[in-house]
Amino acid sequence: MQRYRPEQQINGTFGELWIDDTYMAEVTAVEAKVTLEQTEVNQTRTLAKGYKTTGMDCKGTIKVNKVTSYFINLLSDNLKAGKTTVCTITSKLDDPDSTGSERIKFTGCTFSELSLANWEAKKLGEESIPFSFTGWEVLDSIS
Image 1 (cartoon, helix red, strand yellow):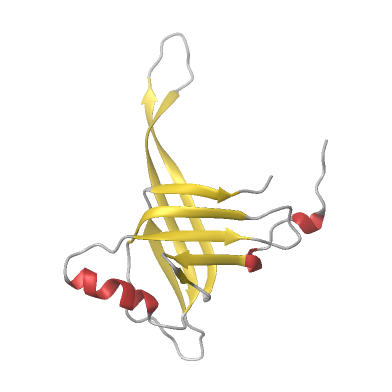
Image 2: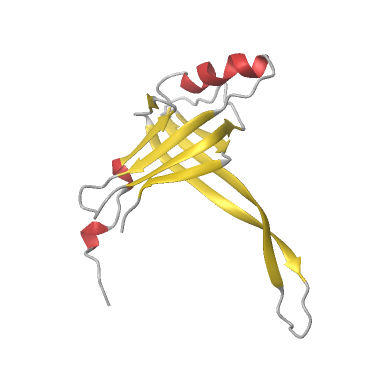
């Protein structure tokens, strides 16, 4: 059985994010996942339920320190004109102690929410921006 060294566990502090070609230095967290949509398949001679994957739901969230009006500027004009802003999001996780880096490109990304104002006295500003995507490509993976 092969073991790993504790320092090889990936630390999110070394994560990076790009929206199209814009580096997002203010990003603090990213989550993107694919949820399978499954339809029950009835079968004879078994009590167990069977399932067939019939679709998928691709969603994520970007969390950033509120430093600029980037998302307001990116989305506002299109939203007011009834248009959808579509972009590519690239996530990279590259801890120097790990055995490699992980880089995923998400395509067909659209944002499902725009926060125009969200602040509180004596509290540092943050934004959580939900998005959906239609495809992904693994550019680098950790073995």
